[in-house]
Amino acid sequence: MIAQKTDLDFMKEAYHEASAAALKDEVPIGAVVVWQQRVIARAHNLTESLTDATAHAEMQAITAAAHYLGGKYLNECTLYVTLEPCPMCASALYWCQLGKLVYGASDPKRGFTQIPARLLHPKTQLVSGIMAAECGKLISGFFKNKR
Amino acid sequence: MIAQKTDLDFMKEAYHEASAAALKDEVPIGAVVVWQQRVIARAHNLTESLTDATAHAEMQAITAAAHYLGGKYLNECTLYVTLEPCPMCASALYWCQLGKLVYGASDPKRGFTQIPARLLHPKTQLVSGIMAAECGKLISGFFKNKR
Image (cartoon, rainbow over all chains, first blue to last red; front, side, top):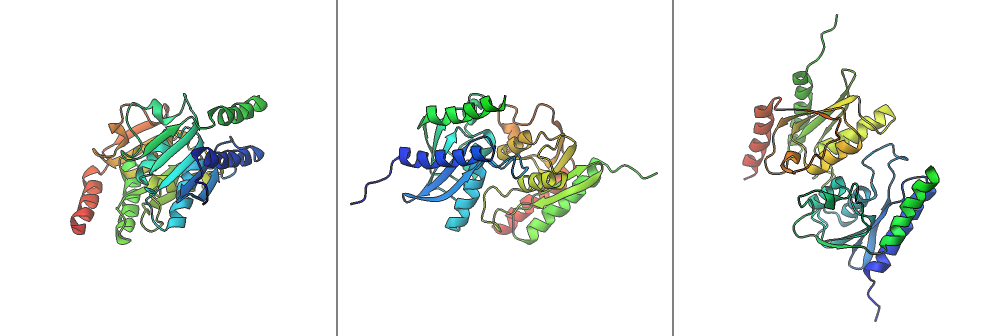
């Protein structure tokens, strides 16, 4: 019998993506999409590399996962992301009817939970705080080095 | 002396894009980005063709305009779109610090103004209602034909 992977296992994969972003001098945020216990999309923030303010990890992960599945709805998928999504990404997750969202660190400045309305799809389950300290430290360390 | 083009002139270009979407059996929403009185990006909704729930006209127009300008900020640009942007697109316009947003028809169901918080960038000017009736009729006609 193969052991089921946990939210922590998959968040480690998202963290690995965030680390890859840091190596490119991008704000280190990473995401993976999981379907049937398998990672079907991996992405990290590429706003600088692509000169595109919308190239957040989640946006790319959504597009890649939909391409993999051949359908635009991700209702059977879980998206793991190291930082709480911004309103753009949360609303994108609404449109693709994401099954479950798991995020690491909270973002008290730009996180979607700061908006006094539900941006996620009504059916999207939400889990937060997985590897919050590590995910947050990666980002704060990145900005500390910038100064 | 060359006459300055108006918001109406540019909204006609966005409407033309929306019509192109209808021909592809996509929900007919179109957008253009204008910089220094010139259209630098044109796009229409492609969520079905690209199997991507995030492929809204505005998202593609932002990416194309940033690519044209070689910079991710659109603070000197105006985006014209036939329908009031959704929260995803409005938040994307926040990230690119759009100079001015002009939309045609209102969207009382999914428009960003339904959210009780400012999603646009604080510096983004807002104009609405340009060709509202025509833009709205294009979309309602599309859905009427679907039934």
